[in-house]
Image (cartoon, rainbow over all chains, first blue to last red; front, side, top):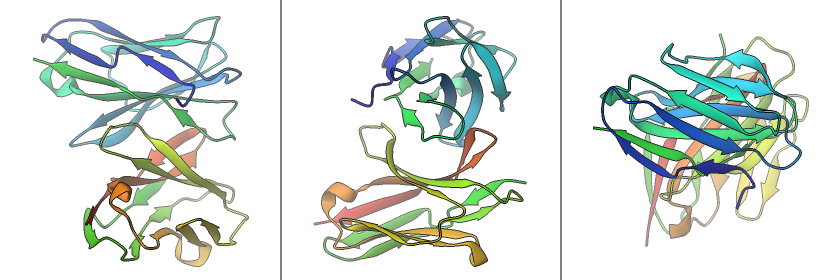
Length: 112
Length: 112
């Protein structure tokens, strides 16, 4: 157990739907990062939050959004889902930007 | 531009062979961090090592060793006496303004 908890582990949904992925960071970690791992794009950075504020943005689609709550857990919202959004979504946490990263076990999203 | 290249897509070895996974990176930063992660078939990302740009000493951890050479912008990973349990996808990554930039990964298959 890495200490980073992601739920759900698996999610199957239809095109056009909206889903929410949840991440609880390791205790004491203020930064949360979201990554998407797809077969064709590899591991891509989506977005980072630090202590509730958005810190950095990567190749995140406009249909996707995220937030970090006061208790530091984070949610990644994916809407108007397309087949191409099927991927493994990872959350990682760290104390700050200059420290190591701990990854959760991921949420496997399948859009049918 | 920041970039990580893992030129070896797939490597297959027989158990007990030594194997080296290559990683070449590009960055204009003078201070940076490099990482290796392992992704076993179960899917989670397991942290292996973090190395900062000021520390060029090679590191050994059991059967694992890492060779960092700034002159060639490489951070190669060697597994000595490979075992079947080493079969996984291995990712090299570069930290850039807080987020990780991953290489495409090398799939290592160790056959008994």
